[in-house]
Each structure stands twice: as structure tokens, then as C-alpha cells.
Length: 116
Image (cartoon, rainbow, N blue to C red; front, side, top):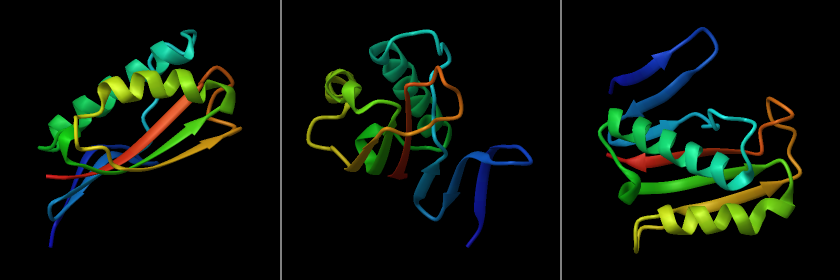
């Protein structure tokens, strides 16, 4: 079975597709000066875009892992997440707080797997 890779660099692929499963790398916000709500919106928009490029969408999410710089942002992030998630299609999800992300200004990083 072949593996399709999207936006490949020396370090990572933004997405990999194997069979009918799409694996996204961790998605982060474009504006790291924004608050947790805006960063979450941007992360989810990036997820939507990458899933579309891979031939999928959020209604086909299988699993998600959310990394928060501060667990204090859990409720605010969930407000945005809950509004974004397709009705009846919430993935299996893990949320971890107190994580040192790639930049001190990054507040959230999310990675997902989805069916195609």
C-alpha cells in the first residue's frame, strides 16, 4: 500500500495518508500573539485546510490530541472546539496541559487522524 505525503520537509510532513487514514502533524496558530480562543480558531482552520487537501474533513475525525501550554486554557479552548466539531462526530480525544510547545507564545497545538 502506498503512502501519500503532503507538504514534505526534511523534518516532517504536514500530513500523511495511508490507505483510507489521514494523519496530520501538530497544527499551530499563525498568530502566536493571539489569545487562546483565536489561536484555537486558527489551529482548527489549519486542520480543516489540511484535511481537505488530503480528501477528508472534520466529520471523519478518528482521534485528536490537544496540547495546551496551560491547563487553565482548557475551558476557553473547549468553547471553540465544541462549536467546531461536527455534530455526532466527536473523535476520541486526549488533552494534555502544562506542555512546553515549540514557542513560548504558542498556547495550543492539535494533531488529528481522520478517515478519508
